[in-house]
Image (cartoon, rainbow, N blue to C red; front, side, top):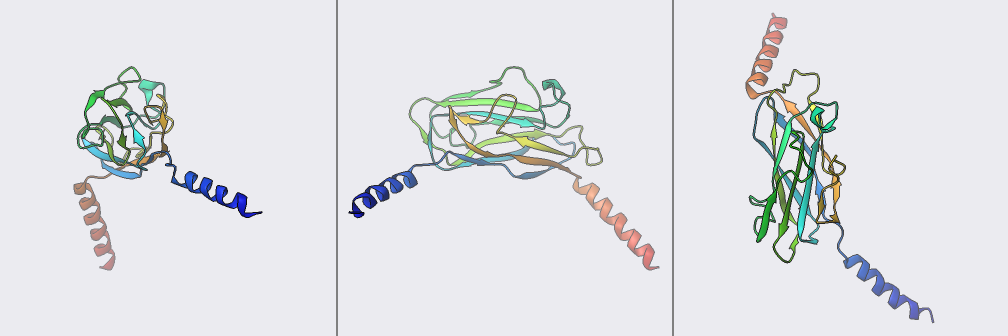
Amino acid sequence: MRINWVIPALLLLMMVASASAAPVITLGTYDLLENTAGQTIPVYVSGGDAVAGLNLNVQIADGGPEAGGSIDGPSVTADLLTGTIFGAQPNFGQSDNLGGADIPQLAAEGVLLESGTIAADGLLATLSIDTTGFFFSDSVTSWTLNMSSTLNGPTDFADTSADITNGTINIVPEPATMALLGLGGLMVLRRRTR
């Protein structure tokens, strides 16, 4: 008698296990050069769900003074088409500033496929970060890189939620500055040995 419910239960478990999960976006920690424009960060998605479009919302820190925040940080822009999963398919193009005003620490971009869907697996976007005016010697050299709870809302795939892990960007000294610091350290050590 017990066998009568075991088989349907196993079939149900197999169906649940085969159902796809939400697309996954995991941002990491990125070390960027001080006072440098055009530094790129690739953003990848995995999970393979079929999606028809993307509403990409990226925010650095609290959005900065232009967005009513208090933390000044680098500016961000996004490219959703060059080499991405959406760039390989016929689409209506990238829409800029979906959330309204042009705010340096916010990027709100979108893309929609002309028809059908694509697997959410691969390069999703390339972020361009401009650290001009920010230096390793400043009091703040690290900011959150947020895609899950921005002022424009979370990044989603045309109303399909994503599982997002936010990241961090850090300012590091230019290689020449590092070389000078290393040389200074060596001179201090040499002086101590004398």
